[in-house]
Length: 455
Image 1: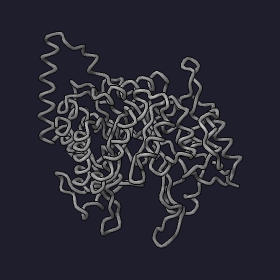
Image 2: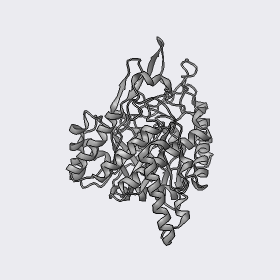
Image 3: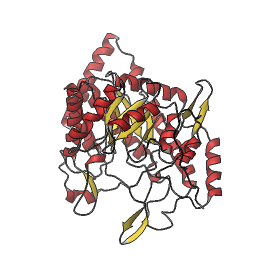
């Protein structure tokens, strides 16, 4: 029998919060596990395992996001739509880090602001779905909800929710994070050796990128000759992890009480976000997230109203703490001009200081003639451009971007200087869920964003 995650309850902030108080509320997007005993055994094991991140890193990120909200930094958040366990391989992990490093150099150099790097990595194993089932080759099967829940293979057995996948997800996240830490601590991110960042697909041959690296190197040589910069400061970087807080039993099991801070942290990632489908005011996801010390992201799409958004901020950030909330707009190029201004004005009228970011991916999905999900480079760029313009017009500023991307030479999004068309999609279409920008498209996008940052 499946456990009925979430019961109907009237939301009341005066009621005490704890890591499992979300179970009193209706919980969307939760799988029905057929064996409760097996599920409880997995969750008990997860509670005993070491945390993946430490509170000090979480607190540092919150401080950096506060600076981004104030306009002194810029948030670059990106990675896979949904990680798969098979992606836990050295080259795949390094490839994602490489493309984010390349993009951050372009943004820092062109936008004249230091970049906060946050990966959709080491935990982004679950995805919300609009339908419980999907039709594959004429056969109706349970929807693939990410490797955290079930498998991509199109069989009834593979699509059955399996709680043991939570343990697999934990260990794959730990291995991924371990490799990321080794790379960033071992000089992989050293600006003196950007050749280590070369990606399949020719990002190193993007002319503007090559010119930027030459200019950066000349500046470093000059500063080091003056003694104005410490070499080790250029060899290591801060890199943080994030994922959507979707599967609540898993998130609860990774929640820890930190005595020194007198607070609960989710130590499965540095920051978490709540999606468009799960941010109900009286829902289990908002109840769970409100009690955490982590900085939080909130996806804001077409269903958001000004009243709803202000109420969400009241629940998730009653103390109005700088760096606590990142609002991630995701409307699509055709809707942002109409949808974003009322929300932005409502947040301003409420006296709220938040970090505004733009996710130009999720509102711009289309289906190709061959039935493949895709996104067009020009539509993604158009939403970003409008987001920058709207914020400037209303006396605000866009402080970050949120992308689904990969360092691999995939062909999942059309357009860009590679001129990928719908015909090209089948050449290297590898995503299990939504289409991602490839390395070249990601780097192109970074230079265009840097121009917009300069106004």
